[in-house]
Image 1 (spheres, one colour):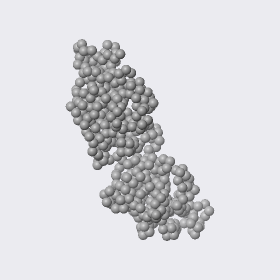
Image 2 (cartoon, helix red, strand yellow):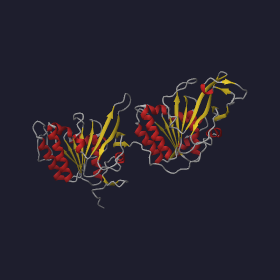
Image 3 (cartoon, rainbow, N blue to C red):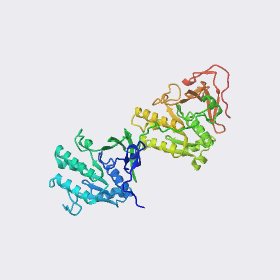
Image 4 (cartoon, rainbow, N blue to C red):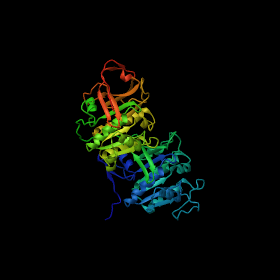
Length: 503
């Protein structure tokens, strides 16, 4: 069966036919892909990924039996094939027209050399047009415009040549990517005004860890696209774009009846348990029991038959499993069955956009309905600043709420007793807050727990003791009514009620 050479993607909003870029995430950012038979500018500094994107664009055409042409003024065909091999690609089916060749000028062989001091810009443009006339390609990549800018020597002549190419390609029904390494003067937007759309690729070095890459759609005439910056990686196999998470309009129907945490006393404190579609912030100093409490809730969700996604930033997965097993909470059988997935996250390696994309995959593909982020302190290190973390978390929590996911967020605080502080305040974003505190009595350090906030249930306002042991696991005692000042870490005993006795 013959495949139609013009296979387009129809936008949900009915905005017309689209042509895939070859990068699924970029197609989603563009609302379906590019408008065919138009000229687009792909700009970015050297190493930002322009060539990789261009090759993916042409390879997508090969898969759809479209003719592709790569016109290069800056790289040799040998270098382009080396780039392709690094990704496991073959450039068979793509015609390479190389304007740089050490063998000399040969206009009739399909290979030619360009010496800016010897060859006029107009002749170069004619060579390109001649090659397009011969091949009649559907997709064209022109790499790069910086050489043409040098040949033109003045902005007026440069603009005229780009206009001539634009008119020529439009008459031949070509979809064209013009690559530019941003060597023009700052503020020079000639290409932006001439192109139908502009895709800007950026990369930035971090003080620690790998460089971060992101892209932005500068403009795209006639179509609606997702604005702002979108993270992307260059991996073996090509560019992978992580569209910025937009929660609006992604919701599904779900049962909002509260479910058990696995502890009857903790359920009482929450006023009935955890409500689907809500997020709960577990806050307190290190070692007080936040992770154990979250695992107890996650294990109960597993026992109900739900899928759980656990994002672990601070400790190793093996350490977590060993520690929980000693408390009688065995997670390994659920991991083996695929019902629970523990994702060990290195914040130095993972961009915020990639993390949000992984969460989306866990919810939409794996069916997770219980999610734990342990902890937000490490996640903060993946963000360029606190303000961006709050915006990112707001969108992520909105997305999880619209899918009926129960989310637990763990936030470590500085200090053990007395003045306890955290790096950031997420209390207003969370639907519930479960606060943990150490307190001292009779030469012993104990743990206390209290529900500070719940938007969905009439929660208790009591403070209870929390104990962790191998025999009893997580144990929550009755309300502590004979102590004052527990939350300060320096309580005063004013009664005779006994504390939890764990043997």
